[in-house]
Image (cartoon, rainbow, N blue to C red; front, side, top):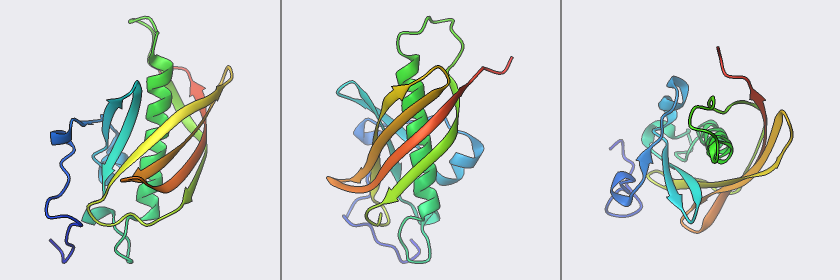
Length: 154
């Protein structure tokens, strides 16, 4: 496996642990697949650190982690704002205006990162979020973002 050995004897299998693949886009599919799971009323997002997400130091590339963070924050926005909508309401759509990622620790090959995010404020056109990414019980990134709500394409 390209000289990279998993931390444990078995590589984490998100599907076997109750995670489902999240629909994504072609760019994000280069980094993913991304996973999601409901836990205590919150949607969590996950990503397995695979050899294609590594940098030259053989840890997860910051760009791969930032892409995952953007997807997790946007997914949190979508899931949060979609709750309680009428079934025939147009889908919530948004674009990233600002993304801040503070890298706190390296993500090693075959680590499974989990993002826990929340909406902190919403105006008519902007949504503010924060969150963190962890491996096990260790925080590896702290996140803040601003998204602009956009009208569905019609």
